[in-house]
Length: 206
Image (cartoon, rainbow, N blue to C red; front, top):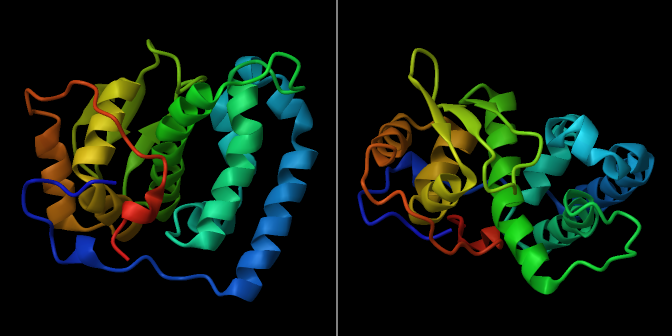
């Protein structure tokens, strides 16, 4: 994720803790098994909703998914290989999901995984739509206790996560107060239009 043009707080510069290769290998196997056990959820994702899929992913899977290294890339690829077709209604691969569709899905799903981790850590509050890739989907986001609730669409999510990447991580992963203030300020910015975002979290502070 690209760094914000504004100040990046010291806490936002913290390194995401690395999961050891041995544990990462076990988590990747667990991720694969979780997805295989969740075929019914994936096949009916349009009905059960994206939050139901997030619920079956362990904290370790989410942590590894945002880890900016080859192990993180592997678990992200494994997740997207099933999530992208499911969100396109093509879990059996009969229609074929284009590279563009996968990239679009990844650009939205990856920030969602970080948001879900932040929610579990108690740093933020977030309510996900049934299909986060839908252009009319609305997220309910709150940057912390006693903070206002914002309704945002996925284009605003892309803008925040790409423009304020280190602070987005700082808020969700570390609960950094300076990051919280910067992210909240971003919601008031007139530049809330869509921007391109790389699905590769290697742009996180390493």
